[in-house]
Image (cartoon, one colour):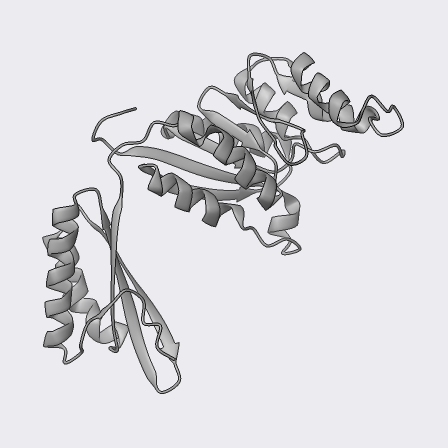
Length: 256
């Protein structure tokens, strides 16, 4: 997965609580930022329910289409934490009590059987052949099987888990990004921006309108793996703004 080619990833958020609106997901933003810095392009992010067949189908689809798959949620001690069993089924392997995972949990709970009950021991059930992902915060590990990395859903634990294995990931060419803003309507910019995208088909160009008291503007983000080409596209964007009578603002327009 090395070299200059684009290395791709998909993030799968598993949990009814996200789909119901009870929980606001923060993991996609963190993971996408970290992965893009590592030269791994997040192409898709999916939010799916705690349904076994949905998890199986989604994981099997994504692991074939992307270089890396990262899942969050559903590996805790409760009845609706079905991610580990579902992924074992997706890979066609047994879900088994992992000796190392159990040892970590027993050490964490000091072999106190009143604390380390059957429900918590369930977190040591890992698909056969998987390798553990460290959990520096609450001990209960995630795991990696094939190109799928399975993590908890709590954002702080996701961050700690991801940082424990980030160095093992192999990215492609790092993604370079430039943001240029201007006080101009997105509708006024649209035709010229479409022409700019046609001139730079190798770039990802996105426009994001903003609204401030007394002014309406747009921030355009240009992303690509060739820094010189990104700079060239940004220069063309500045010219486009000026043609519309607007002065370019480097980065986001943070004026109040």
